[in-house]
Length: 249
Ligand SMILES: [Zn+2]
Image (cartoon, rainbow, N blue to C red; front, side):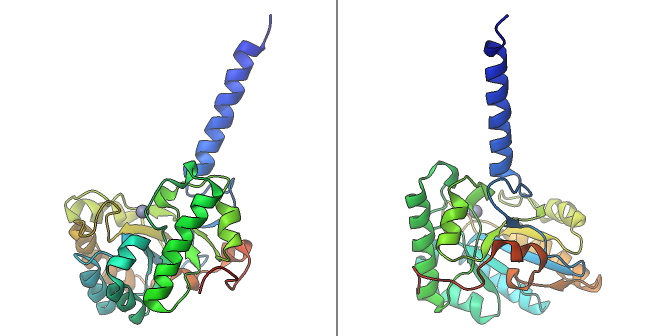
């Protein structure tokens, strides 16, 4: 009996399964090392994706300030160009900004050249708005393919940032549901939340602010220190260069 008609599809399916896991699972390292925990049990890294969002980000900044919490914002380049003052406000309030691409595509299907272009345009917009160079990137949807890491390294980023807790907050919902979901946050986590909607400026994310109004004082009372991705340790060293080179200004 010829084993191939059975074996080939099985092997192909297994390979596809591994590739899908490598592309999507936040903890997967198949396509290069990523940062996914803070490395210290008394710290918490809150990260906000898909902004800036003029409808939500200013309220969020006030709330974070009220609780002396620093956070990291992964920004979409086209929104940065739409509201550069808001991006300046984010950095002026001691938060960190990172690159979440220019138009939020699924990077798995893009060539290296297109990925490079997405990162460059967003990075340039951040630099123009703030005078600072973004050091970290997060891929849209968390999707990573084999082309991403070489481009990220080639552009001098310190690394790719994933998460240990995802809050499923990208659809409007009662804050109470999100509050319940965030009960599993523990020291050392990197939490991904959304202050923006990648489809358009002005996305409804009030539930995210509402949930943080509940949790920020409780996390602080539990002794957790809020850190930006610059403040994390451990796995970060795996992704090498500490300074940006070339390309951007
Ligand atoms: Zn996103």
